[in-house]
Amino acid sequence: MSIIEAKGIYKTYQETKIPVNALNGVDLKIEEGEFTAIVGPSGSGKTTLLNILGGLDLPTEGDIFIEGTNLKQLSSRQLIDFRLHNIGFVFQAYNLIPVLTARENTEFILELQKVPKKERRKQATQLLEAVGIADKADHRPGQLSGGQQQRVAVARALASQPRFIIADEPTANLDSKSTNELLEIMAEMNRKYRSTFIFATHDQRVMDKARRIVTIDDGKIIGDETFEGR
Amino acid sequence: MKTLLKIAWRNLWRNRRRTILTAAAVILALSLALFMRSMQFGWYEQMIRAGVSQSGHMQVHDTGYQANQSIDRAFFYREETGEALHSLKEVKSVLPELQTFSLASYKKQTKGVLIAGIDAKRYDKQNNLSGKIIQGHYLSGSDDVLLGDKLAQFLKMKVGDTLVLLGQGYRGITSYGIYRVAGIFHLPSIEMNSGVVYMNLKTAQDFAYPYQPGLLTSLTVFLKDPGDLFTVKKEIEQKLGPAYEVITWKTMLSDMLQTIKVDNISGQIMLLILYIIAAFGIFSTVLMMTMEKRKQYAVMVSIGMERRKLVWVSIFETFIISLTGILIGLLLASPLVFYLHAHPIPITGEMAKMYLQFNIAPVLPFSVKTHVFLSQVVIVFSLSLMSALYPVIYLSRFNILNAFRH
Image 1: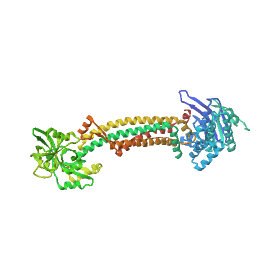
Image 2: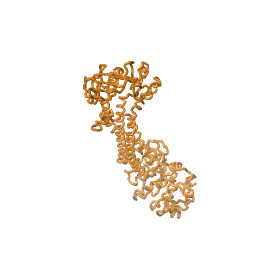
Image 3: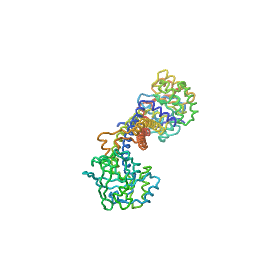
Image 4: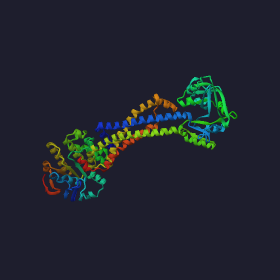
């Protein structure tokens, strides 16, 4: 069974008098362990699709199933709890909690999952080591570079041991070196733990790493290619 | 919960200046409110104290005397009446008094006066009348009388002169007598200084009705704790029965209480304006804090934090700021209020004269009663906490994706 199954997804925004159709009948399946990039021009609907896959938004029409659970049937509270246990997020602007240190940011999600203190400390340390930022564990986001912050964000996303990780333009604010390092870390996590990654990206370097590229335009999937051997 | 507190605490110190500014609004609101209320209540307490020192906490009269204060409504003292009052543990002292009106003459001058027949020793203990004597001495002999300085001036009398009193006594008899001016007093009240003649109770009783001893118009009751007023009133009424009326100072000084009530309303309006200004100050900062952290809130909910936990973070932030402001406000305002309680501000000029007319010392004391502090702390604290309502409502409803866009 697929981890994610999107069936006939339509999304219409009605914020002005003229409705905007962001997604126009998207059908998509994501299997466990995929390293998938969703690509397309600006305004094509990448982020909207990612938000729906991540349970941050609900489709106007159609259904989204995560391992058999229809997200449309969950209440707002259930959806929050579902995200906590099943979905990891990496944002373009890092979006760490500015008043918590790197370790505390990583531990925070474990605390929400009610993991005991000792255990979460151990896991957070391991994750920070895995993303190569253990020496900055006690630094707050403001004291870290963009690349370092994004590594912490990856560690935080992985901390909850989610079914999949949504990463919206994770490399958009990073230089080449940081981008390569970050992609390497995520690819390593994907290989090692079979963590499923779904990216929305414009970045060719991300596309080069992806084993599947889904192309979207005008809210429709217009291409879906798989690259074996990457 | 510990982490939520930690986030709230660090959020506050992330923008130190704004936090200090918000706390300063609370400090200012509390300090000003405390100062204003303490001054106002201090003044009321002083007025009431001055009134009660004359009237007592309550008076026992013959039924109907309060409505028609005539010597014909006097009553004869009975042992059991005195015992009934003294047996109550809440009662500090009971002063018998006989009051009647009379004409006072000396040579060619005559004036209507109130004769106050008092138990000289006990009255002095309660009111320190001997301390107000500016010429001569306090009551000692049976024909001694004390005059206010204004009355003495009007009658052109001095200590040792003989005063003639002529008036209507009890049961329609004509009362008259010749008395020696033993002393001249000066009280804060101009009315008292120009219209009252004090004499021994026995002398006044002989003046008003020499045929039967023990005539009184009132038994003035002073309590150990003014808070027992209504309990004691009820007990006395039960013990003495319908032949007597028990009038509390709240009835006797109803005009004064009305003045206080009106003044209190004007004070409350001023305070309301102050509260509104302070509330806007606090609210605008809380609003800024909420708007600034929209993205942070969105991230936290995205990754799986329940909204109610975010609400707690926001409540903690407001609570910490409010509590800090309240504590500092109390620390700053209290010493000043206590100092002004111990060293009241003196009042001079026309205002002082007006105070004296009402038998009130011309000073502005500050109240340090617990309720003054408690009420302001509760109001300002509630007001500050109310400003947390906005983030609470926002956090319960906000749209994650909209918050991300900002």
